[in-house]
Length: 233
Image 1: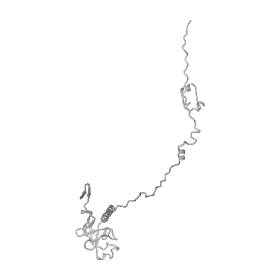
Image 2: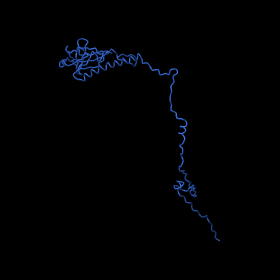
Image 3: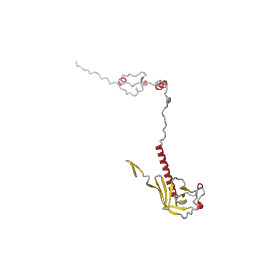
Image 4: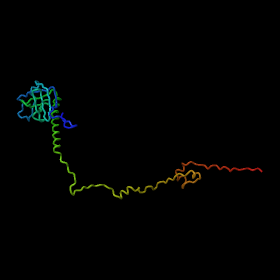
């Protein structure tokens, strides 16, 4: 790892990173008759002697922006893009590819299981997708996008419409409803106990005051005769 500053760690671009490792992959020699006259027509795996492969160890590595496919100790493919001329698919199977080594003719590459060929395909796709993303980020840092100028030019104005209710409508909404309070029964306060004891009722009698029936009835205290002194003669 290369330390560029305190708290900042960046991977060394010269360190080799393993993108994919398969212990078993198949290499086939493509018969000259199977090589298409025009590669745009596509490759076909049928006729490669698929039952007699050369078994090798597959290692896909990257160093900086370079991507290299190593098949055993004999075959090396420098891949600069995918899909591209260095690694191509075949038209009759998803388990086989055609590779273009740095030395020698095209070779067939295959896997015993489709999941292995899927891993190989995805490893290449993810690597070059990451390179494209890094390139776009570096490009934006060097050439920042032009910011939009939203300031008003000389003589320009902004018109804003605000819905404000009229004054008479506001006053009408605040005033009490017309006719409020009319034809409502007037409830009188209950009479005091002293008034009821004295027999004083509000106008209209007990019917006019609903509280009259709820007040307890009080009877006048009996009048005690005054103490009398009897004198005998």
